[in-house]
Amino acid sequence: MPRTSPEPPSPVPPSLKSPSPSRRSLLRALGPAVALGAVGVLGGCGVPAAYVRPRDRSVADLSARDRALTWANWPLYIDTDDHDPNRRPTLEAFGKRTGLSVDYVEEINDNDEFFGKISPALMNHQPTGRDLIVISDWMCARFVRLGWVQEMDRARQPNVSEHLDPLLRSPAFDPGRRYTVPWQSGITGIAYNRRALGRELRHVGELWASDLKGRVTLLSGLDEAFALLMQGNGVDITRWTAGDFHTVCDQVEKEVHRGQIRRFTGNDYTKDLVSGDVLACQAYSGDVIQLQADNPDIRFLVPEEGAELWSDSLMIPDRARHKANAERLIDYYYDPHVAAQLAAWVNYVCPVPAAREVLAASPDKDTAALADNPLIFPDAALRGRLAIARDITSAERVEFAKRWNRIVGL
Image (cartoon, rainbow, N blue to C red; front, side, top):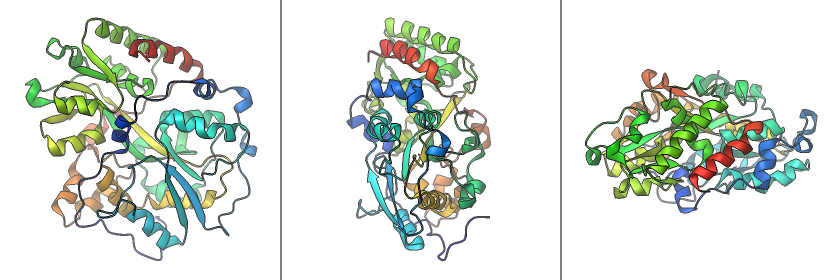
């Protein structure tokens, strides 16, 4: 059963403004992702000296007497007050309910960059100064392999145990989600302008159609791009092979040489799509929900071959001083009422399916309509076409990144 609280969960507010640009959209202003440097190579290769054994990951927990924690997250990735962006309603409610003080720091702008910031401490068995962090699952896999994250105590997290979406419960890099809990999820699919293109799209392979020549973009990041392209070839991305990867690279190289691909992008693909310079592109579901508010001709396609379901996940790094407090905060966000309030603001795939009923019951028409948006709460048919890709292993990463970055021009 869900953990009971001295106060009832905060209801979803009757009206919510259109959210600010999403966490991923923010990156369009930050330039290209940090290149795979020495630190990234270290993490990807899993240098033996960097590995931390389970018995060396924890320290005395100060949670009982020090009712605080520090949480590092991405910008624009939590609900804020309509009139004061420095106020975060769900986080303030948590503080009132529990008496815990949360130092919420919006310091993560890039997975590799943040890895480089905290890896020296973790390699040297030192605390990072953070009790909770949110990074993308492909980077979470690196932390798990290196032993830089602590196993969570699910006895303290009844909401997580009950409400975590079954689709997200057991990714290949963390079976049973012992070390990670999804913060928000999303779908990597295809966005396109239906009116400008003059037809519907249904398949990944249609990106290579002659009427799209020079007006297609792909994501530049290896971890963001490869899975959807493999799915277009009929590959089961939960068990893809090196041969599948190189087949995709061969295809993309061919399309680059014949001028099909306009460019490779970060999150700035949205600008090309809105301007009309691009008619179809790899895209994230949460971004497209926001674009559709201004242009209903922009569609998001989950191809018939399937699409990748990804997550940005919460983790408690080694030697965190407030582990129990961090576990309590994670469980709070898995209360369906709290998850609904967050989902209504960020518009990504909610990892708490039970939040759908909360939103549907809202007296506000626009808020209630979010419950029927399959890009926030995928229906059964859509869920059957979503898969979590197995991560790139440490043995594969350097070779694969080298080839992909040559194609992309990084």
